[in-house]
Length: 350
Ligand code: KG4
Ligand code: ZN
Image (cartoon, rainbow, N blue to C red):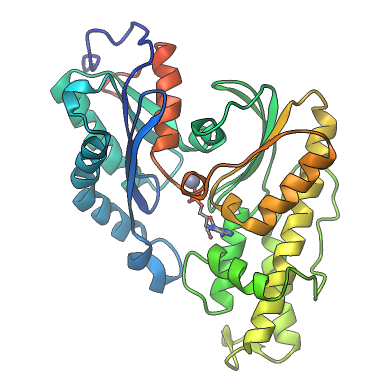
């Protein structure tokens, strides 16, 4: 068995200076955190994947391996420190694309080994769940609605690192549904921002009344939304199911009305699940909304309106902390470091 990364790996580190590495999907990110975010830098691979309509795993891993050292150095430079000042290396180990995770983990292990620093493997979702704490003090217990490209879930958060799953999606994640429908409407990956822009032009009105989830409860399902949009296009004679392609260049107004109806429907689904979770957990002191989809101004408004109606404070990260970033990984690394929850150099992904 390999040695621990550091001789002080078992001890607690009070207010550690954390260097975090995040490469779970298509962002190569690094951040320095010491109680506040000293730096948070990333290289977004979006232009590399755009034309494929989604993330291509091999392109993602190869880009991470090229950019990682530069991004980590940039994070240190922007924080105005060197590796000598770092107490802990935090690195995302799950969930994510295996090839991408392995690049970040190998880089983090090399740093930890060379510098005899403790290393901590972080769950990417835990990063999102605690991302509001980068800017706010959120009271416990609270409900966290996580909506990203890979996950959609509701968590009951009792303390740092203490959380329970209240509901999750049976099929697509919210962001995944937006990405797929945007692709159908001929917009590049990631589709969420395009859907938001189109929907805003149609004033977030519900034109087509796509089906809401009939089943009550705290779980989500979004795959029906894509089917509803698809059959809507088929009925209008705009989509050929056999050829699996559009028969015409869609009119902009139709795209706007589809996107608008889609977001209203998604808002209704998210709110209905949030209400069900709130009924199960009436003692909550706040609501948080995190993950890439929480960048969406319309959905932010819907969640805020519900929380305000319930007299609960709502905490939603600034846009740069909604989508993937290393600052949220560093934050989790900091409290795990304070708890002495270190890993050793046998640390693996998943
Ligand atoms: O959290 P994230 O960066 O990566 C994952 O962990 O999945 O989330 C990416 C997702 C994508 O599906 C993207 O379309 C969606 O977040 N997204 C948005 C917006 N910006 C990004 N969805 C709706 N409205 C937006 N403005
Ligand atoms: Zn994410």
